[in-house]
Length: 173
Image (tube, rainbow, N blue to C red; front, top):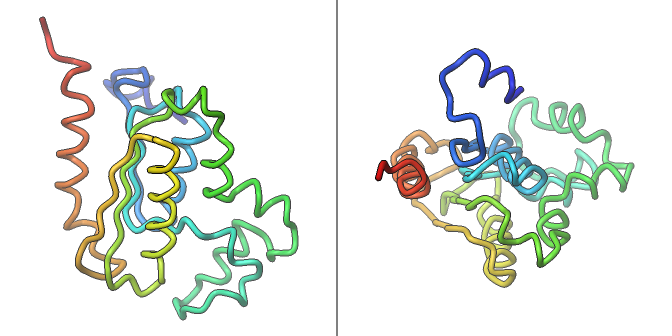
């Protein structure tokens, strides 16, 4: 997809000009892309990311009641009976498995989550940030007031962070 975007739009077509940002399941995807493809992104940001997907062994394990969520997760991750699929998509395992020698090559990670997140995503995001801290992976984690659906109000935070990340890379001498 990135080559197509670079071909159709005026972009800085290298890692130093790219960020991947998402909310909820998109936040999960942004983090996963940042871990799996560090050569592609300088920043990977997640608003209220669904980082604990692999802990939901079956769709029936999901304790919240959001219309269509069980069907959606089943379509993405299967019915929870294939441990290899769950393990291959487990953000916690992916970040723990990054070799120490490759930590410096990872993008900067930004994670945040609402303190009243009704999908119970605050604790898993805190745990992921703790792993990043212990592994000395460059990141920022924020607990913000609000529920799962307040991402738009946090856009300014990520734009400010993006400005800091990219500012030195493109400053003219």
